[in-house]
Image 1: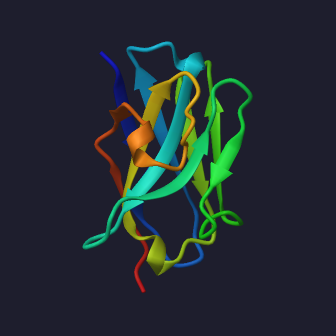
Image 2: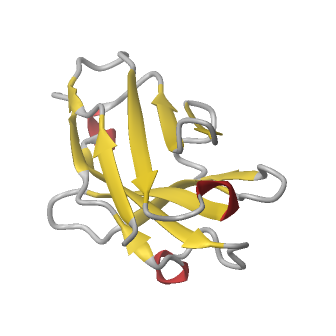
Length: 125
C-alpha cells in the first residue's frame, strides 16, 4: 500500500524558510512522479511544484517559482519542497501527491493517484 507522509510544516515569520519533506513507502520510489499542492482556508487546492521520475524535470507555479524548489532523494524515498521568502499568502495545508510513471499533467491534481494527509504552513501577517 502506497503511503505518503509529509512533515516539516510549522509557523514561520514572513521572510523565513521551511523545508517540507514527503516520505514515500509501499511503491518503487524511483519511478514515481511527485508533486506538491496547497489549500488555504476557503480556497481550492492549487498546484505548487512537481518533479518527474524519469528526467527529474521540475515544474513550479508562477507564484512560487523564484522562492520554492522541489527536489527528491531516491535513496531516502523522499521529496522535498524548500520554501524561502515565505509570505502570509503562502499559509496553507501543503499536500504531497504521487503517481507511478510519467505524469502528463503534473500541474493538475487529477493527475495524481496518491496523496498524503498534509502539513500545515502558517506565515502570520
